[in-house]
Image (tube, rainbow, N blue to C red; front, top):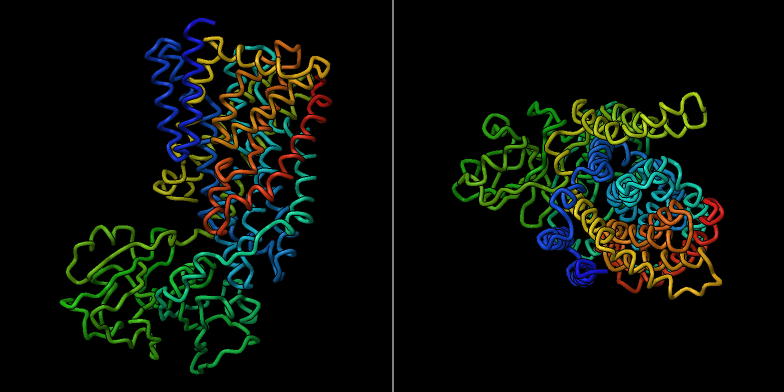
Length: 610
C-alpha cells in the first residue's frame, strides 16, 4: 500500500471522528473528505462525482417524493387512525401498530412511515392519555424491520444496490433484487415484531410528551367547525370521534339548525350540517382540519375553497389597524386579505360569543385560512403587529389519495417485475432490461405524483432530503478511493487477522457485520454502508467467501443501529417528541441488535451458500 492508501485511511479516520462529533454536518464532512482525496489525486474528478449520478442515490431521491405524495393526500394518516381503531391502552396499540408499520415500510421508505406516523400517534396518545414514549420508539424500530426486507424499503439497501452495480464485478453487476434481502429480512422482521410487541413494553419508559408539559402556556383559540355530509365522523358519538377528553381541545357546544346543544355529552351523535364550537390550541385545530369533511365555518361564509393552496397563518391585530372595533363578519377578510378567520384568541380568555360576532381589539390573535402568498404580502402590513405561518397546516388532498396509492402500487409492481420474469427462462432478457430501468420507474412515479396534483411542486422540493442525498453521493466517491488506493484491502486483512482461522468465512462475515454495526451507531446508516462495502468485498475475496453474501451482510448490518439515537435518522425523528434519553435506546436496542446479529450470521451463510 503506497501513500495514497495511508492518506485515505487517515481521511477515513478523520471523517469518522468528525461524524461522531458533528453528526448534523454529515453532508459537509463527506464533501470535504471527498474534495481532499480528489485534490491529492487519490481519485479522479470523474470518479469523485460518479456518485451524484448513481442510480441508487437517484432512486432514493425519487422515493422521497413518492412518499410525500402519500402523506399529502392523507392516505398514511387515514391508515394509521384506522389501524389504531378503538384501542385505548399502549399495549393494544403496539399489537395493532407494529405489524402494520413493519409491512408498510417494506414497500415505502421507512423514513416516510415514521414521519407520517408520529403526528397520528401523538394525537392518539393525547386523546387516550398515553405517554408517547411507549409507542414512538417501537414505531422507529418497526419501520427499520420492514425496510430491510426489500430493495426500496430503506435507502441503505439502495446504496448497496448502487455500489454493487458500480463495482465492475460481474457477480454483482445486477445489483440487488427487489425481494432478495427478504431471505434474511423476513425472519428478522418476524422475530423483531414479536420482541417489540411482547418484550419491549417492559423496557420502554413512560414519560409525558414534552409539548403536553407546556400545554397550560399555549394559546387557546375559539373556533367553529362545520361538519359536511362526507365527513367520516357523521353518525359517531362525540366520544368515539375523539372530540372529548383531548388535551388542548374542548367542545363547547353544537349548533344543529336552530337548536344549540350545550353542554355536549360524550354520547351525543354527530350529524351532517352540525356546527361545532371549540376552544383549542393550534395543533389540535390543525388536526381537526386534516379530517376530511371538517371545514372551518368561516371559510364557508367567506366562500373560500378549503383545499390545496390554503394555509393557516396567525396574525396579531395592531393598535392602528382599521379592523379594531369591527365585528369579524363585517371586516370583509375575503375581499381585503383573501383570508377567512378560522379562530380567535384574546388574552387567554374564553370568548362567549360566536366568531362572527366577536368585535376585534388590539392584540387579538387571529388564526386565518389564507393563500400561500399571505405571509409574503402582509408581513409588513401595519394592520398587524405580527404575521406568521403555522407549520404543517396545509390541507390534505384527500380526493387524490386513490391516485397516490395507484401510483405507488404501480411502482412496486414494476420494481418486482424483473424478479418475477427471472423465473421464466424465455423472459430472462426482459428481466435484465427492466432491472436496468428501476431508477426510471422511480423517477416516473415521482413525476406522476406532481403531475396528478397529489402534491404541489413546492412540497415535492421540500420532501427531498438533499443532505441525505449528498452524503450518499459523496460516500460513493470515498468508497472508490478506498478500493483504488488499497486501503479497503488493508483494513479487510487486519479484520480477518482478528478472526480465528477455524471460524472460516463465516467468522469473517461476522466480523464485517460487527464493524458495520459499530460504524452505523457512530454515523449515519448510509455512510456506514458506503464505507464498509469495499472493505466487505475485499474481506470476501481474501477469505474465499461469496461476494453477494458479504454485500448483503453490509446492507443488513448498516440498518441495525438501534443503540444510539444517531444510528438511524428515524431515531432522531422520535427522540424529541417521545422525550427519550440515550439510556432508553441502549436498554431497548441492545436485545434488538443481538437478535439481528445472531439471525444474520446464521441465515446469510445458508441462504447465499457461503
